[in-house]
Length: 384
Image (tube, rainbow, N blue to C red; front, side, top):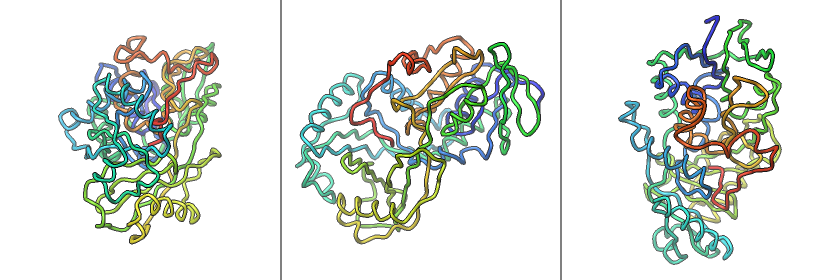
């Protein structure tokens, strides 16, 4: 292990490897990334891989649009097919109030050039006759949205970072961050000390724990959401939109020949990754209510993944005033995978240029919580 590093990154999910890649691409040297397990083994690996542009605040729209461009051109930049399946995202409104909000959201998105559109109950019934639409007022749909492979994407970015000289050390946990005179001076990992002037916290659901190593309270909580996959199921078309049922806090999409079903989301923070029988039953009931033909299949397997939830469900990006050289890239609240390619770029710009030039990230600052300047999304602020 090196004794010194110009920049240390903690966390080997999509955010950490993206920061590393963009730093190296912009000319930074002597970069070390520590991952306590393996690259793309934590939250990134366990997510559903959703990619959409149906957001409702200016800052999330900017991230969504720029990241969308990266996914569209991913193979050209990284030499790997990200398996971006543009099957569309369909949000279902089950009340007149939701439907009116969808109208406002779509008008907002259209101003950014996003081709989302409002659908009536009758249109949804005709397009996707397998859906139970009895309680559906209408929906918001964007046919260019979809999902990609977290594994392929994250490992491709990590390989590019390595090719550019980044040292990625797996199976090694950072256990100390030394701060002197208000500035980061070193980290300790596996008993060895590495001197550094810059540390990037890209630890996902473990962001608060890493923050405490530096004496900072990072307001991010790990929240489990369970996911389940059915047996191979042929009673639905091969290509179906990722469909979100707000009322039930439930979504589903294809997973190869099977179907991925979102399970319940915990209310209490924990690092629990288990799945439980009650959650499987609840998920099956929601699935059969919205798609009655699901009664003809079984749930084959499931897993638990962790969201990194911030107080306003938006990322926390940038420097920390109290500690020089300590940079946050946390709190993506279910949108880390889809916004990761650009999040790495803006953090690299903050470190190397003093500010982000790609996107103005002042509204995502650590200080916003103390100032009460939280960001609010409307109904489509869903944890994908």
